[in-house]
Image (cartoon, rainbow, N blue to C red; front, side):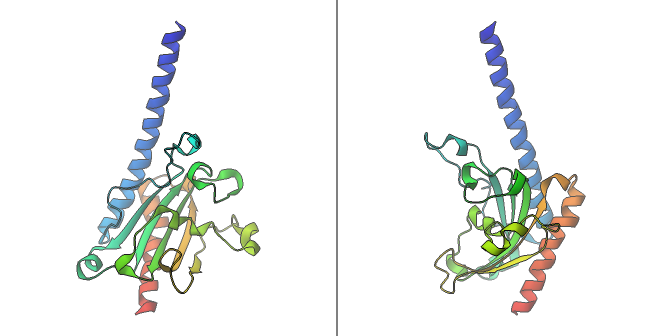
Length: 205
């Protein structure tokens, strides 16, 4: 009887985990679809998971802490290497692959932004670039969860671009718990991301 209970509990745990990942995948697919309707294609293929450990010494990172998707305008890819890469990331917990960032109360967030590469030809998107929203100056640490976390943050990288090959990153965050529908996602995250990208592109022309 104990063996049956154990098997049932284990199977249920796996099913719960699979259902959770299916929900995450569904949300990310919604992002892909909504961005596709605006002429954007994915820049990282089907990849969504980053910084996932395989080490026996780091089991807390076996399960992903965050998921990330990157996008570029299809016409930019056809004509040249893209000068602007947009991203949408889901940060669900702050351990595992996210030990380098801290959040009060471990609030799950959607973090979105635009990366301007130093060298578009050699740029490679990595999920950790979307952590930039969390890496603030010491003087700003107390404001990281202020009343308007969706306020745009602009970061200028080191001139040489050796650190991550990004000239600048414009990024904002939004509480994941508020995203109750695809329409809400479109109006509050996708639209803001696209509007910000258009303004950034206009100012750089």
